[in-house]
Length: 262
View 1: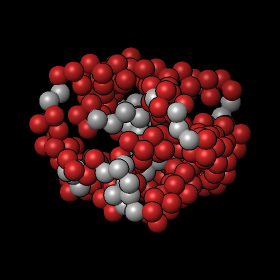
View 2: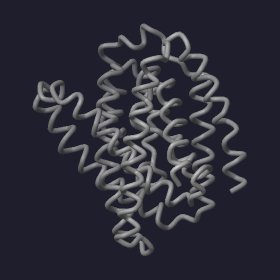
View 3: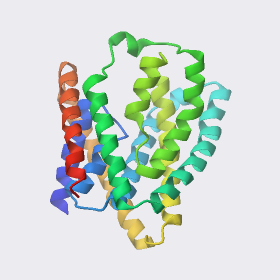
View 4: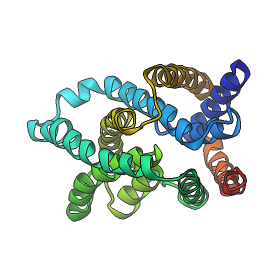
């Protein structure tokens, strides 16, 4: 278990540093499957702790920026978003509890393909990272639908679909990347928090001791991945990131072959 733990935090920390991914570390689920040899349900339950802690760290890091937001925006982020994610994470969790291992694995394989295609073909240009205001209609749509999507998919398969939502918001909606990331992070935090609760309440197989073991492993993985991420990020040059992103995307396109063999 110790070897698997260190191998996982090294791989995920290094990969996410190269991709500059700070919380929705989808690769963790894959390594919990392939290296730890866990079931898809256990891998998702453990990963929920990783995504929740990662999102919380980003929120705390940006607490001063959040503090000065307009009152209406704070209500939206900390009243409406929790309500939306509470409901949709319940729906997603119901689907998770009632889905077979095969359905969850197939869904994970499809996401791996979509994420891989995104990394290979979708890259942000410098001017796209400097948008100030997006198209009003798309901005409102993302603000309303985004938390619902995060809640449902985190409850169902453990990921907020950030890798697909962010390119849509920026490439199509011309939205400000910092605002998009902050909104998605807050949605992911509440969605993962509620999903952990729903998975425990709805499942007939998770005892308190097993829940505790999953929590400890999830928290340890989160801390270890973050440490490796920060250490690797010091040495990772920006000029390498696009090539690295394409390479990881190509690897993700091969992942379903391994997933469907489980």
